[in-house]
Image (cartoon, rainbow, N blue to C red):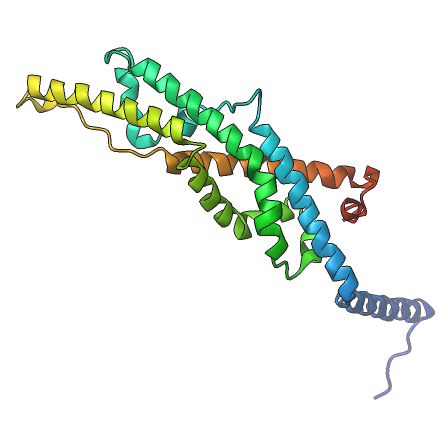
Length: 251
C-alpha cells in the first residue's frame, strides 16, 4: 500500500516534532551528566562547609551571651515533671526566691558554657569531621549545612555541654536547684503528715533533674540561630572577601 501523500504543512510539522524530541533527549542527557570534582576542589569544599559551621556556631554562641547571661524561661529550664512547683510559689516560704536563684544561676551557666562552644568545636570536633559529599551541602537548601551539623555533630556537643552543666560551670545552678527541691519536698512531707489519710490533700514529692531539659533547650536555640544565620550568609555570600564563603554564592 502506498503511503499517503503528505502536504508541505504536515511534513513541516513532522520535522519540527522530530527536532523537538531530539532537543529534549539531548537536554535530558545533559541533566544526567555527572560532574567530576578534582581532589583539590573536594578538599576546598570541605573547608567551606566547616567554615560555614564556624560562622553559624559563633553567631549562635553569641546569642546566648547577653550581658553575661541568657534569658531562658521557666519552661526552657525547668523539667515538665516539676510543673507542680508553680502553684506553690506563693504557698511555700522562700520557694520563689529559690526558683529565681536557680533560673539566674542556670542562665549564667549557659552563657558561660556557650562562650566556649566555638573553640571546643574548632579544637575537638571539626578537625576529624568526615564530610563525604561537601558539594551536596554547598549546593543544597538554605539550611543544608546546619541540618548536617544537627545529625553529625550535635550528639558530641550535647555530651560536652552536659559535662559542663554537671561540672564546675553549672555547679552553682545545680546547687540552687537541689536546695529548691529539698525545700519543696520538706514542706510537702509536712503537709502529708498533717493531712494523712486524705488523698485529696496529698502532695507529690519532686524528683526531677533539670539537666536534660536545659540541654534540649540549648541545642534547640543553637540550631535555630544557626539555621537563620546560614540562610543569611548564603544570601550575602557574593559580598564576602572570604572564598570559603563566596563559594556559596549562586548556589
